[in-house]
Image (spheres, rainbow, N blue to C red):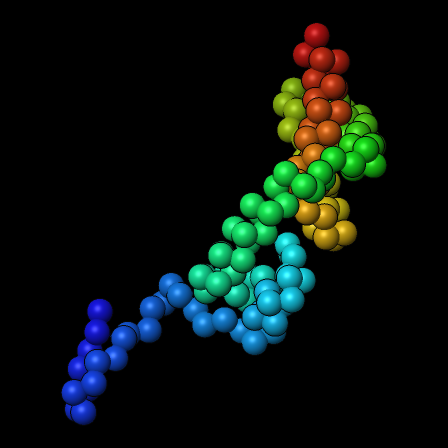
Length: 139
C-alpha cells in the first residue's frame, strides 16, 4: 500500500508485521554468531533477515551437527525418576496422574541454553521415565 505526499513522491506505509533489523543483531548475523535463545534473536523477529539467516543456518547444519548427547538423556531420566515417585503418590491419592516433569527439563534446558533438539531429547527422556509409574498406579 502506498501513499502520495505533497511533493508527489510515493512512500510505503510501515508494516506492523515487519520490523527493522537492530544493529547488534545485524552484526551477529554477519559474524554468524547468532544462536538460539540469544536476546538479539528475539529482538530481530519478523525482520525477514533473521528468518533467512536461520533458514540458511538450518540447511547448513541439519546434516552436519548431531545434537544427540547421552548426558541429556541421563539428565532427563534422572528428572523423570524423581518425578515418577511424585506422580505415583499423587496418582494413588487422587486417582489422577498428571506429570509436569517435562516442564522442569524444559526450564533446565532454557537456563543452560541448550538447542531446541537437546531440549526435546531431555524432555522426551523425562516423559518416558515419568510414565513408568503409570503402570504401578493403574494395575
